[in-house]
Image 1 (cartoon, rainbow, N blue to C red):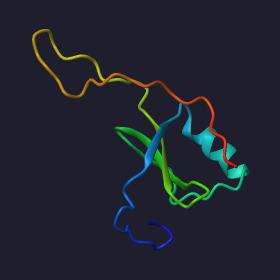
Image 2 (image 1 turned 90 degrees about the vertical axis):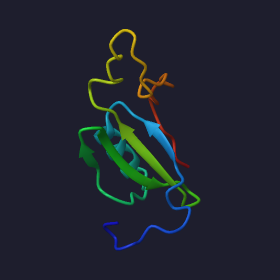
Image 3 (image 1 turned 180 degrees about the horizontal axis):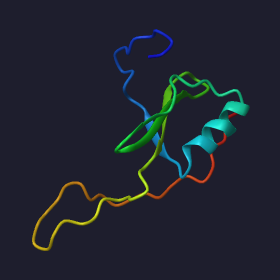
Image 4 (image 1 turned 180 degrees about the vertical axis):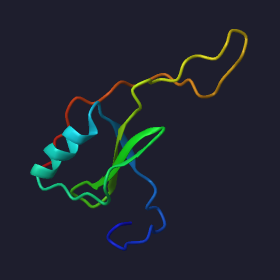
Length: 95
């Protein structure tokens, strides 16, 4: 991690919240004194950042790529990548 911390047992268990614009959420939560574990990481699969909840447990904010979900497979072909979406979170409240 950027602060020099090392992942510990159970450190990878977290909830993930899908957001429409991760930069807006980071700015809004940062103004509320949220503690972020790292900077926003962007890749082909979307953008992600980790923050701590009030008890110190990790929460992942995730912004999927603009083309989401992935297109369906061709007719007659099964794919495990097409999962139903639970939707997105429009706001997060800390405190």
